[in-house]
Each structure stands twice: as structure tokens, then as C-alpha cells.
Amino acid sequence: MPKAQKEVAFCGVLGELFNKLGMDLMLRNKLIIFTAIISMFLSLSIQAQRPKVYSREKPIKIDFDMENIKQPKSIGTGYLYDFIDGTIFQSTRRNLDVAHKFRKVSGKKKESINVNILDQVPDSSWFTNRISTQDFSIEEIKRGSNVNPKPKSGKLIVLRGKTVGATPGFWVRDENGQTFILKFDPKDFPELASGAEMIATKMFWAFGFNVPENHIFHFRREDLEISEEAQVTGEKNKKRGMTEADLDLILSKIARQSDGQYRSLASRLIDGSPLGGITFSGRRKDDPNDIIPHEIRRDVRALKVFGAWTEHNDLRVGNTFDVFVEEDGRKFVRHYLIDFGSTFGSDSVQVNLPEVGREHGLDFNQAGKILLSGGLYQPPWRSKKHDPVFSPAVGRYSTKNFSPNKWKQNFPLVALGQMTDLDGFWAMQKVAAFTPEQIRAIVETAEYSKESDTEYLTRQILARQRIIVQHYANELMGIGKFNLKREGDSSYLNFKDYRKQFSLDEIVNSQYEYKLQGLDKNAKTLAEGVFNDANLEINSDLVEQISAVGNAEKNRGIAKLILNRKGEGGKKATVYLWSKDGISLEIVGIVH
Image (cartoon, rainbow, N blue to C red; front, side, top):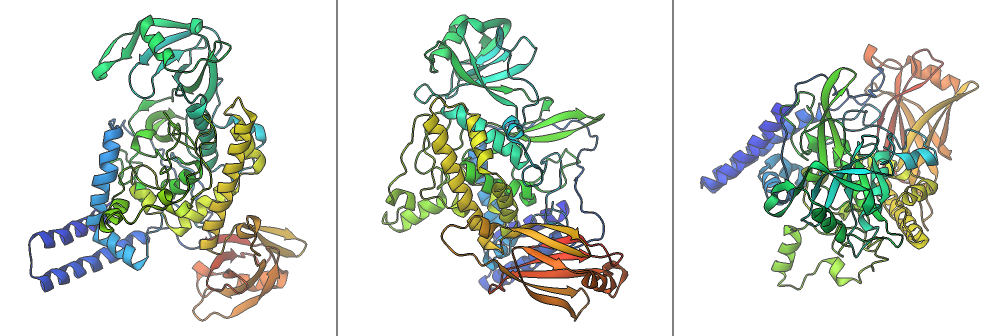
């Protein structure tokens, strides 16, 4: 697969080279077309790496990419790197990729390959299935990733600090020996970044990602004691010994509460050796476990949906974290998302500007439209009334002008740009799984001092949830979470209808048509009809017929159940059913 990826990229570079060589127009076009055809076939060879549509083997639940390896090299990145790489280099590479251009014109994007026969993402060093596959109590959803206690109140030893930059802060060790980074809100916007980061951390943990342990933590000036070895990063990124004046300078930039305490977000240091950030395309070449190019990982692509819901506009390499860890006697890389201060209504040091989520920081597409129109064209967010800042703590976050499919993070990222309808539908099911009570509980972890802030943000998160579910459910048939239950002599296939569950004013058709067929060429139809309420009975006679179909050992006893909403034959879902003994049924494949 990596070899094919390189060959596809080579074809793209070759096509561009033809232009630069100044070849005869007809010859050049022929060569470019030939290159595109080769690229298309190579693309199809990559597609073939996806799991089979159905299999009588158990679906893969763990993609075991945690084999023992040597420690990879650390990769250094920063804001400037993320800006240049995302805005210029990744965009340029994409423009030189002929295969990508062919797929863009044809409307055929490569599907993600790290999915199993049930179209789900298995657990890995990147991702753990949580919401929508597990039931969480309110307490569990509020606890999230926090398996260790918050900093112990009392004496805190300051280990290092940063006095310059937009977000000054320092590292401390509490009396239990735990080390935390203390991060603060802007002085003019108390609770803004810390509240947003608390909520986003809980939500991204529930989605399934590895995230830090974060806590809202209050302390007093007299609790702080500077270590003799403590250093501070000052002007020109130079380090020197930290003084009491440095500590006071940091504290002078943050708000002090009426009782004399300071509010902070305490982020526990992640265990392991840091290796830098996660790239959004390619692989970490010195990690033998990292075999799937990141731009065709569904869990990475789906960050577009999760980012749109949480307004995580600062998604970039610098806000991810690879760590070399040791678990169960094995050493490997575990992948984290970190730093969620620029989420919801917060842009970390200020409230979100109106363009956040609607344009990249440097958006060539929008700039080109404005330039070609002589300024007559203006982005929609400029021509419409801005949604207001609700409060200094919540900032600017609402559903006004919100379109999940058009949402943009600050920098272009290859993986997010390649998300397909299937990726979006998978992510949508995670979004839909949050109950209003769970969302309210998560917002409460921000510990806003005003109840109105908690109420407002809860309502807006729920409103965006509904918009996201409606959009991605409407792209496909909109049903999922298939399940088989046996009652008496019959089996029942039931599922969740997301279009019905999250409908607004429209009337959603809850009548479904089905057709059950064998897999042989020109196989006869075993049964067909109409049913209601997302619950299809498959009686014992039909199960016995299923067990007898198949013209080869590999498809013996397997039938495909084709479902569509009555009157919407173009949008279908297919469930592959297997009966080994003529009595029981199993789901052995799902295609949306």
C-alpha cells in the first residue's frame, strides 16, 4: 500500500513535469491522460486493501498496531510550520496529484481503509470505541480521561515557566508528586479558554481519541514555591533561572477572582517520551506499526465532523502529540489530541472572530473569488449579520451560518479534505449518540460561574448536533447501528433511524422496503416486502432458506438484505446475513 501511494504521487509529479518541459500540446495531453489512467488503476489497487464486503470470520475489533518497536525520532513542529505546510506545501502536493484531480472530477474519493466488515473503526493506538458502542453514566462521561486526581490543594512547586507569548503559564508539581501544566484564561475573558478546553476534552475522549487529563483548578499565590532548578523562557526563546518577579509577571496577566484565588486549567503531563505531532498525511516512517497513510484513516478524516461540532478551528500538527510508551512489556507509539483552548466560542486568547470555521487563515479559494470579481463577491459570513458574542466566558458560538460540510479549520489538512460520505456518516453516529443529559453534564465540567453560560452553550451544542445529524444522515439512507435479536422461532433485525430521530419539521418516511437475495449471479429473491418501525422479522423458514444459498464454500449460507426507505430507492443500505445451521443468524457485513 505505501508503494502504491508513492506511485500515485509519482504520476502526479510526472504529469506536472510534462507541462514544464513544454511538450507538444497533443503529446502532452496524451501523456497526461495516460498518467491519469495509471493513477486510477493504482488508486483502485489501494481500494482493494479495504476489508471484504462480508466475511464469516469475526469482525476485527482491535487493529493491533502496538507491537514492540525501537523509539522513533522526535519531530519538531510549531505554528509557523503548520501554517506553511498546511497552506502551501500540502495544497501544492494535492494540486500536483493527477489521481486526486481525476477523483475530484469524477466525484470518486478513496474510501478509508481502517474499517472492518461492519464499517466500523477498530480500536488501535489512535482510537478506542466509546460513545455509540458503550453506555456511559453521567458520572463516567464527566470523568472522561481523568483516571488520576486533580492537583492536591496546598503547596505547589513551580518547575518552569513562560513569561512571553499569548498564553503564559507554568509547570508545577503537587504534594502527590504529579506534574501539571497550569494554563490560564485571558485577563479580559475569564473562564473562556479553560471552560472550552474542559468541554472539548470530555467530548473528544467520548468520541474515542486519546486526550490529556484536564481539571479546573484554583490556587492562591502563597501556594506557589519556585524550585531552585526552575527555569523560565523569556525573550528570544532564551531560558534562564526563574525568579519571584517572573512568577508575579505571569500572574499579573490573568484574572484574579474576588476571593483572591486564581483559576487555571491543570493538564497532567502525559506519560511517555514525546515524539512531536501527528501529520495529517503520509506515515511516520520510523514507526513500523504506522502502516496506513493518515489521510486514509477514517478516525483522522472524521475530525472534520467532530471539529465542526466543537468549533475546533486550531486543528493542526502542533495540537497533536505522539508519545513513546511502554505497556504490558511492549514499547510503541500512542497518538494524542491535545490543546483544545480554541474550541466552541474561544480562540484561546480572545473570542472567536466571525470568520472562524468559515475560512482558512489564508483561504486562496475565497481570495481568488474576491479578486476575480473585483471585490463584488464577498464571503457569506461577511454579508450576513454576525452572531453576537454571548458572554466573555462563552464567546461566539452558535448555529448561525453553520454548515457542517462547509466548515473549515484554520489550516487546510489533507485528511480532512478527503473525508467521504461514509466517513461522515460514521462520525455522525458518534455525534448522535450523545444524549442531552450527557451534553449538559459535560458543559457543567467547565464550572462557569454564571448558570446562563452553561444553559446557552448546552442549547447551542444540541442545536449543532441536530444540524450535523440531519446533514450526514440525509447524504445516505440514514440508518445504522444494526442489531439482531432472537425471539421465539424468529429473528428480528432492528436499527436506528437517525433521520427520524433528529427530524425537525419535515415528515420522515418510516416505512422501509427490503429485498433478501443470495449472492450467486442471477440469484433468486428469497423474500421482499415493506415493514415499519425499524424492526424486520426474519422467520425460521426464511433463516433455513438462507442457510442453503450459495454456489461456493465462501458464500455458503450468506444472503444480502437490501434496505431502502419507501419511495427512496436510490439510497440503500445492505446487510449481509449468515446462517450456519439454519437456526441462528449473524451479521457478517454492512454496506451503506
